[in-house]
Length: 494
Ligand SMILES: [Zn+2]
Image 1 (cartoon, rainbow, N blue to C red):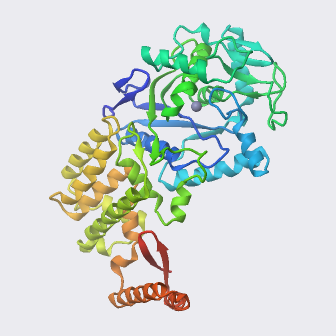
Image 2 (image 1 turned 45 degrees about the vertical axis):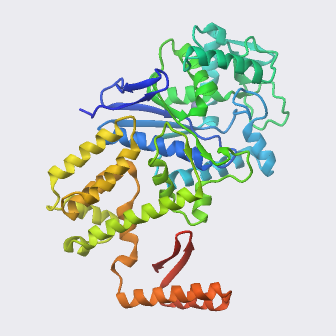
């Protein structure tokens, strides 16, 4: 039987004990990226915390199936269905076709998604793959009287619902109603301000690139309908957990529930998991404020993407997190110290020191080692499961990681615990420790490398770049490659 699990459910507005429909099995849906631009590190924070949730559930004994969409059509510049299609705007900006834009930014998204140690969802479905499903759902909503055609578009009629603002308290509902009245650009075809588009045929933008035939004319789907359809296509009529960022709560997830439950005639998803924003000093991170700070940009600056993951895991997913390079630099130091501690564990034990340093075979050595104290391992695993199953307390999980080094047990046991925790944390500390060649290098060569790096730094300081380059080339002839990173000069044997 799986470990009990609880987390904050936006729908009930409290921490709920999680009970999936089928014991031990979890069906999960995640809103994917709109691939018109790079995903900034704030977007990636959301996916890191969702990855931690999935891995935490798996650690606790659940079998998770997760589906994610890729929005490559229909998401307008305002989430409330006004403005230009984001994909079209991206294509115009970069003088490319919409499909080229979708392809480029989908690849860029997954490069960063993977780099921070995330596991890919079981199903990833672009919206443009599912046009017949969208049309079918819109037809059904029309038949059931939840939708209407006006001015060429098909709208969802929110007045048919008893409670449209499902996520909100009474006070918030008032505020949202005022907000919707004031903010939304006038669309005179709508019966109610909160109605939203299920299918567009009347676009203000003549050059809308992606269009399909439908019973209501040539057009394209609204954004919200995607997630409902793609989720039902792969997970059926019920899902256990729906994930997203807090920005998705209104209107996107509110609209997803409205149309899904009207279509199905029953409750669709019981648990809603939302993670909070990443802010920089100027406020909420966004794509409209000039250059987009991505995980790839961090990498170009010399940061390991897993350091960014470590930074995110140290904070609770429901709190806004403030990003700065100063804090990230401190995280680099903390991460490197952990790697050094793992190196120390390996160096302290003759059998581990002699083991094959290929990560997989090294982990097999640790996992099968007779030295591992099973009782201590279990004790730490239980504490870890308690932390992550308690509203995904990843910072407590990180604290437990520090406790491992202080524990009164042998190196093999400590490494076995770190390996176990890494099923959720995915920090690859052991992999980094094994890859760090400085751990078991010939001392003479090491002294030479240190000296060469110092001589090169002195030459650079004196602006004698010819000498600095010559030292770098000299190192290379001896099989040592050096790299300048934010954490200083790093070297590897090539
Ligand atoms: Zn969605």
